[in-house]
Length: 266
Image (cartoon, rainbow, N blue to C red):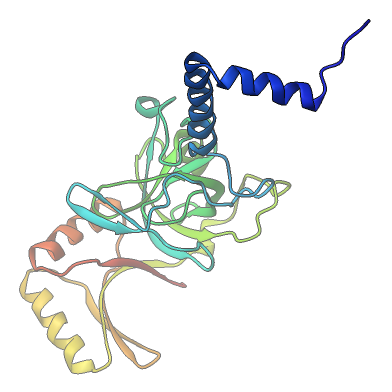
């Protein structure tokens, strides 16, 4: 007669098996393995179908690189910044990104120091008007005055591979659709004049003191721009990344930290 293994039979077998020392050892080992593998974090996204759902890796509240601490933003919503972009390619191709993915130099991705991983941003080359949409899945660049590191593919679309760096605008895209074009080109005349802002004060006298201090350090083309009740100290117009970096080094020597790039419409 054909025999069927019922629930009662299973319980009886389990009890007899567990009654022996060897059986108990095997059961404990199996249960431990299930617990370890079941509780080990993976890099799967928190919720399926959302390109911007936070990764389980790369989103600690803060981290340190080369002795400097960086605080990760809780959200990319409304993020916008202008500064210098660089790019990275073959040296890192195939290596793990900060959120645990494989870096693909031919994919439209980027690295950022503080945006949550992953985030979708639009990066616009302020020198030629070209613009790309990229997925931020890595940390960096950890070089002074750089705000984003583009993949080789993204840098190629921005026409910045040969120069290595360029002035860009980075803007978050909160509700990105994959049907949106990855890259497009606009007229460079859409963009304005580039300055470095080194301070903003509620009292104009304080802005003037900083301007005088910078002038004493041998820097020219300093202006004070009044806007929304603040007096902002700016240097420029700035023609290229090399000039921007040179001025930033002089600011560091004067112990003026965290200058940032601004663009005024023409």
